[in-house]
Image 1: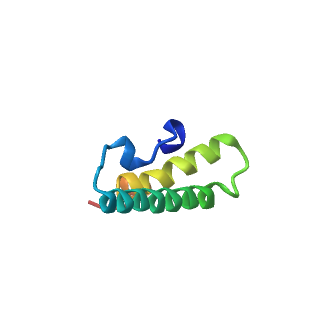
Image 2: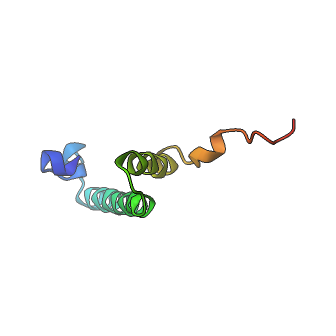
Length: 80
C-alpha cells in the first residue's frame, strides 16, 4: 500500500507519535519482507503461471489466516 500511495504506513494511518510511527513502519516493513520472501520461495520452481499463482496464494494464506491451507482439507483416508 505504501508503494501505491507513496506514503508510509504511519502516514496512511495518521499516527502522530514519532516513536509509534517508527515502530509501525518497521513492523510493516519486516512483515512485508518476510511475506515476499515466502512467496518467492514458494513460486521459484513452478513452471506455469497457474502453479505460481496457486503457490503464492497458499504462502500468503499461511500468513494471513495463520494456518496451512493444506490442513483445511480432510485426508480422504482418515477414519472417523
